[in-house]
Length: 108
Image (spheres, rainbow, N blue to C red):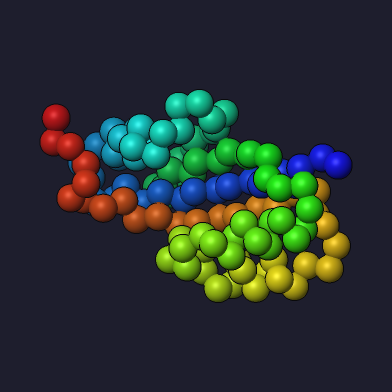
């Protein structure tokens, strides 16, 4: 059985920074995205990072995996959407909006 393909869209809001490109790059470096094939584009002033990874092979395993993820990261709505799936999807998309914290980026 092929794994369920997980598609992520991280919508980053770098509006608090004088150099948004640098802020996004520092976020990507901190999140260790170097080995992940991704695309980054600017849409309405926000940077959208898209990438895909192989997930579990079964719907049950997907439900179990997302149960243990912190609620702050995946809201109840995402968990409810997975709970309500009747059939195993071949793909699953997760979209997150992220406001980059000003205090975490280096001044260098």
